[in-house]
Image (cartoon, rainbow, N blue to C red; front, side, top):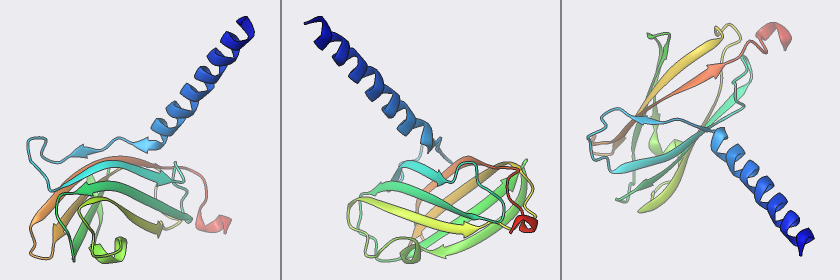
Length: 155
């Protein structure tokens, strides 16, 4: 009986560690307007690799849910470095996810190679999503880190 209890406790311990690891891999996400009722709710953002290495591919995967079917739209991305705006881009929603997006859960994924001369440090990203009629569906912000790792000279 005692051996079973020890085995159960060990199983619980390791299960808890795996769950904690899963939660630490997700990035903290904040809505631009905490009082707004957005049509798209972002569940989590995962960044791979974390930290991001300069001159190497980085993937941002956003898990979300929507209360409406989407057949098009756009994604606006603004990046700041220590509060200074450094980058903007607009992407086609259907290029980042498969359209039409049905009511319920969906994933948005974007990969990009950051230039080797990108300064290391903490960055803030603001992402807004709009439908095909230019109605704002969500607005989130999150921080990410670019490490000292690789540069163009390393390639």
